[in-house]
Length: 239
Image (tube, rainbow, N blue to C red; front, side, top):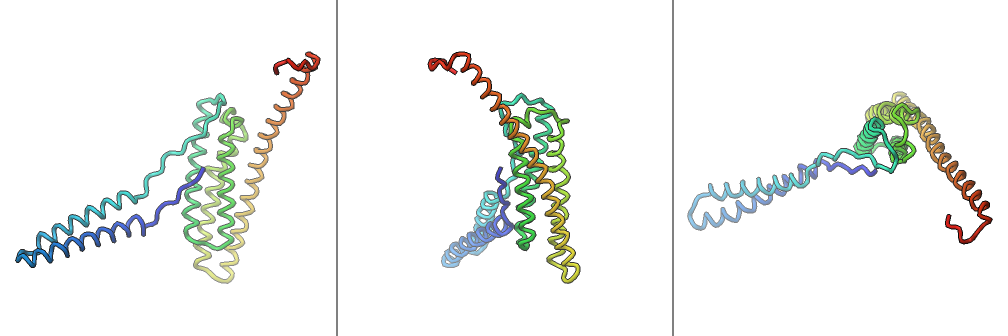
């Protein structure tokens, strides 16, 4: 799931202001010169310039606005999903999407390489959670399942808390020097280590999912082998 970047104020506010101002001034200048030549006043050229500027500026601001993102939707499989499971997984998808958008905003602050590495690890972890939620194995489980509860806890509590600490650290690194800065960097390392622990939990769930598919394939292979043996390897047998 890709997370779109939000447009900056220079685009959502600055560009419409410039376009509206230039358009309004141009209209006022053209009609003002014509009015002066004809002996009329500057009131109606001024009104025309303000009107055109408002229309152009308002229209461009509307087109360039940051639209409210649509509510993220769970990628559904053919799994028989209980309504309670669907509701919980949709909450998890919403949480991961919010945190990935937050990471986009933190990246825009141009932090140092150490902070960028932490943000990359957090984003990768959230993407892996999204991928697991889209798998039929997870969608076929109950909300009380241990793996489902672990993913919910990561997305709604543990990762947001670590991003809170990362955001504080970004401010510290921008303001402090000496021992305070070194302590902030140590905190950043601790955050990265905790993200690594969470990643190990996700990796364990991923391994269980893959192992489950492997066991299904082994059972299927054994079944086919037995059936083929019963048919004495008849080449006309339609598996």
